[in-house]
Image 1 (spheres, one colour):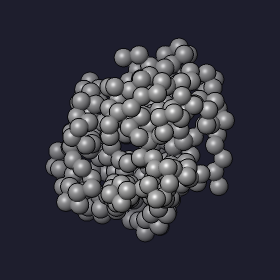
Image 2 (spheres, rainbow, N blue to C red):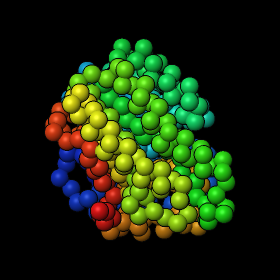
Image 3 (cartoon, rainbow, N blue to C red):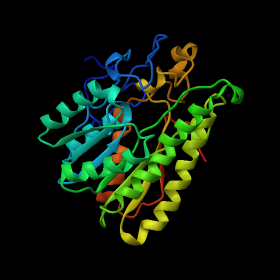
Length: 305
């Protein structure tokens, strides 16, 4: 699988120019039905398959990642495994081919990979995915709430009610439900990382449901962080900017806007999923032991409050 890396195959620990680490994506106009597959994405994204180098910071840890089959979730899964963690991945059943590929990468690192397909709009599934992860991994001390639904709607009048309810069910209600179920298993030293978005700060007019749900994630993160601080469970969030994932080509962007996807950030290129992974590793490792309720922006320089 080729990756859009114009520099040498350098890892995240190599001194390098961030502007030229990756070439611009310049994607052709393309479409995939939801939820989209990384296997069919053009050009391919870098999840860290050969570019992420671990340092053992998560040895013996046990993680559940929602939306772990592709994009940011897949990159985080690979990074966690290379840092020494066992990983359970939740994803939609239609995404099994992508998830199976990430499982193979994790297992090549000598770590356990558990596949837990299921739709997070199902309230019961949100509880069972946690218990299944705990049973398969022998415990749980990392929760990454990463699954997201993003579909454009040109105007509020054209936003279907089903899309509105599904977007909120996946992006914020599932986060409440999964986290609530996980708290029965998390002990002091455990961490929760939520994926929010630049859209929480700079909402696109055609992503009202997605952007407002992401803003809710910010609030949820800061409130829950205070609630759990004295229990020794840290809660933080990562806010990606324009990252090249299957979400963008499965109605996450207007098709005619795809060729201009790289022109949004001051850096002049889109981010690759693997460039998000170190932020999640930082929040999960003991290096960030005094960091709670924080949102770390990984967006190529797009201004945020």
